[in-house]
Structure formats: C-alpha cells, structure tokens
Length: 484
Ligand code: SAJ
Image (cartoon, rainbow, N blue to C red):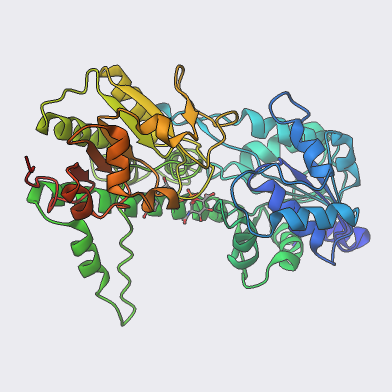
C-alpha cells in the first residue's frame, strides 16, 4: 500500500474532473459516458487541432458526433452532455492540470509486423502532453491496446520525465483496455466487464472509482497493469486464432467439396456440461484496428516483459503469428476464386471488370481500417483487372487506406455496369438483399461471376440465374455445372 499516494487521493477527494485524450471511436463514447455520470462534474475531450481531425472539436462542441456509421444513442448523448455544459472538446492541453483523472485512447498501429515495431508516436505525444501538465494526486489511465510492459515501462518513464513526479507515489497509473466494437460503442462500454490494472493497488482502486459509475451490466475486474495488457492483447489474439481455424476449415471444405456451414452447424451443436465450441465464421479476411495488430503486441510483450526465457518448441512458429498468416491469406484466396470462376467461362483476370462490393471491414459499418478488400484490390489490379469499389456505408472522402487510383462510390449501377465478376467483401444488409436477375441485367453478360466472401448469397438462386458461383467454404457449390 503506497500511503503517500493514498494520502494524495484522499486530500483530492472523489474524482470530479476527467480528461479524455483522443476523440475517436474509443475516446468519444467514453467521454460522453463519463460526462453523463452524475458522479462526475466536468469532462474535457482533448483533440489536437490538426488538419485531418481538428474538425472534430467544432462538431463535438456543437453537440454533434463526428463518427459516421450507426452508433445507437451516441448522437443524443453528446447533444445532452454538451447542452448541460458537462462536456467540452478542446485542443488546450494545459487544462489537464485541472483533471483528477486523465485517460488516453489513441491508436497504436504497427509500423511493420515483421520486425514487431509498433508506431507509438501518437501515443507518446499524448503521454508527453499529460506529463507536461500532470499534478500530484492525478490518475492516468491508458485505454489504448498496448504491448505488455508499456504501462510499467515506456508510459511511466515518459510521465516521470515530463512531470518530475514519481508514478505510484505522486500520481496513479493504470491500464484499463477498451473493448468496444463499432456499431455498439456505448453498449460495450456500459455492459462489458472492465479490466482495470494499476501499477500498484492504490492506482487500481482509484481506476475502479473512475470506471464504476459508467458500468451498467459490466463488472470491474482488477488485476496488475501487465496482466491487464496481456488480457487485452490475448483476447483479440484468441479471436483471430479462432477465425483462422474456421478459415482453414473452410479451405479444407472447398478442397473436399463440402459445405463448411454444414460442418460449422455440426461442430457448434456439441453443447452442454460446460462444453463451448466457439466456432466463428469463415470469410474474405480479417480487418480493423485490433485483430490485425494485437497478436504482434502480445508477441512483442514476451520480449519486453521477459521475467524468464520463453520455453517454446524448437523451430516452431508462434501459433498466433501463424493464425495471422492464414487470415491475411484470405484476400488472396478470394482472388484465386475469382480467377478460377472467370476461367470457367473462358475469361482471364487480365482485362476483366470486377465490381468489388464492401470496403468496410465489418458489416453495416463505415469503418474501413485495414480492410481485407485492400490487398485484394491491389492484387487484382496488378493482375490486370479493372476494379470498381462500391460501399454504401463508407465515406469516399474520409475512408482510410484507399489505394492510389481507386475510388469508392455509392453508385451501385455504375459499379455493376459491364462487370465480369461481382466480388463481395462485406456482409452489408444491402448486399444480403441483392436480386440475382437485377445484378445480372446490369452486368450485361450471360455468365457473370459471383464470389461471395461473406456467405450473403444463396448459391442456388444465383446459379439458376446463370452466375458462375464461388463462395468461401462452399466446396459443395463451387464446382456447380454451368448451363448453356
Ligand atoms: N471476422 C471473421 N469471422 C468472424 C468474426 C470476425 O472473419 O467470425 C472478421 C470481421 O469480418 C472483421 C474482423 O474479423 O474483418 C474483426 O472483426 P471483429 O468482429 O473482431 O471486430 P473488431 O475488431 O472491431 O472487434 C474486436 C473485438 N474483440 C473481441 O471480441 C475479442 C472487440 O470486442 C474489441 O473491442 C475490438 O476488437 C478492439 O477494439 O480491440
């Protein structure tokens, strides 16, 4: 028990003013929920007034959400807390000195997974800003997903260097990883259990005081900072592994000429007595800002927090990194399915017109970070195809990772017109409602190709309309006879 810090917290009293650094998918709903909690008086949302994201400050202070996509309850909550003057967005980081607690929700991508070097530049900037205005008795919480060892290591060092204070004695420090998914940000923060890991018990307790008031169904799960970092990176790594397992099964089912969804339903039917067969869904690939990198944070953590040498089978690749490789392979497999299908009607990928449906990495969402459609696009263009991209959810002006020369459009007719192949990368509701005859009419050829990467199409309906059908894991249909 660190008495000095305990003393500082009791002198300061209950947490009343909170700062949230990083107005993105994690920071905005978190700040709004803190501001809506009666326990807290004032919340500052800190955002750099940069060219790319300065607009968020104006929108938020006008009570509007800069996040596109459907986020149930978020717009009205922001309008409410701004209206009540409990939430303000600012680029003036000196206001951190007024805060009892400061959270950081900043992206932590990887420069290059191969050498396991994360790009912590934005996070370091944020931590430095906190350190510059840090006062004794403040609690600092990292919400970003980080390499295990970062809280006790890099973050503590920078905060101490900038502030001249000592972590765990003069200020509290903890890791409380976000667990949100786009489309249900508020619900996830309120209802998911919250992992809270302090660098010491006093920090953990203070962090529980911070998150308790925003939880409705979720429970607080206290642990050490490093255990919290491993928990977060591991839960995403395990999900990625489960997806890789069913993707590999899908590839096997294609090779064996059977339907992976029959197998999936069968495997999933073994229930009871604590048996959980968490078999997930195969598909065109894994995107987003989390599963595509958190495995590498976990891998890197083993060398950063090296309490003792790792004992692992000689010459064996990490199971987790292998899984990344299988999921990263799926867009290439989508291209193979496209080529094979075109070849069935005597067409070559070179010169083929491809309608790519779905740039977002998740169904019914505008979020296109690290979309698996991007490597498919690049490889198809490199193979000589003309690829047109359609996504009704993604804003062409702000979408990330759009390759040079590529254009995302909401004009469905234009994308389908004269297409040799229709390739589905996201399971948006618009694509679940597609009518084969109508799509064929726009393609304007007798045997257009349909490659279904998200199992949104009923194969027989499309085959009956003359499509050459290919689907991930649909070995039972991918070799279907071609009429006339
Ligand atoms: N995917 C599949 N098959 C599946 C599930 C997903 O191919 O059965 C693909 C999706 O199409 C998508 C990618 O994987 O391209 C990621 O999908 P996701 O549903 O995991 O979405 P994320 O990455 O936004 O959310 C994950 C979640 N992590 C876990 O469930 C362990 C979420 O709870 C986290 O908050 C989030 O990462 C994060 O921010 O870390």
